[in-house]
Length: 247
Image 1 (cartoon, rainbow, N blue to C red):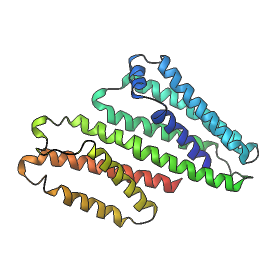
Image 2: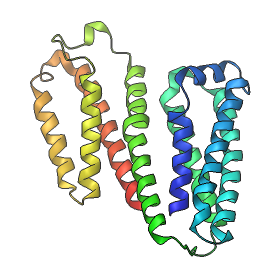
Image 3: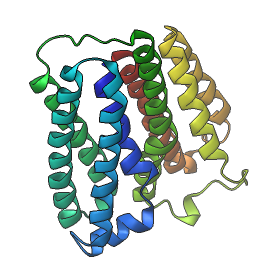
Image 4: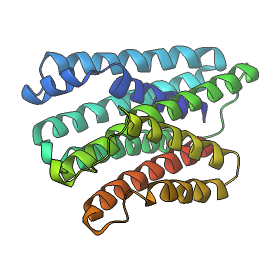
């Protein structure tokens, strides 16, 4: 699974690390413009880097397979991005983000399944093991700290909680974001180490801590707001951990 892990990592780097929010906004204003071409060029360069990393692994089999997957993924990426840029709606930003990423991941897995014929023989076994482990951790890091915060933030922003509906007491700046990061990494650790009961304990602990703030009748909207953000964050941690285990 080293090859598919590297292709997924290349995709996440191109979409969430080497692409700014300003570039995304510019792409939507001018479909197929300069920023779009730069985005595709970055993905092409990352896929070339993947092929270069796979080259020392063995004979031509892994190289040909990786190159074929890269070409299919790149073409699929271009098509999906054009569709997203043309029909994207700001009021449905979270749905578009999730749908777009689901489409990209589906193309990667389908391309891998279609091209893969038999297990590949590698010469540098130790190199493969370290490369696979590194790519899996990098994928998990990007998902936990870049992708899922965007999903949670976009979803909560769509709710448009008014000033009159917010809690009266003040809170630390960016405390919610840091709490989200910590709970996702804890969930990831619990699941990867086989301690699912820790996820339940974490959810119960967070509910107890917020109980005093959200028990009053007039705080029903805040309760729904916090609950939606918490559950979405938990889902992100669980799915990331499961992807790590599968890869």
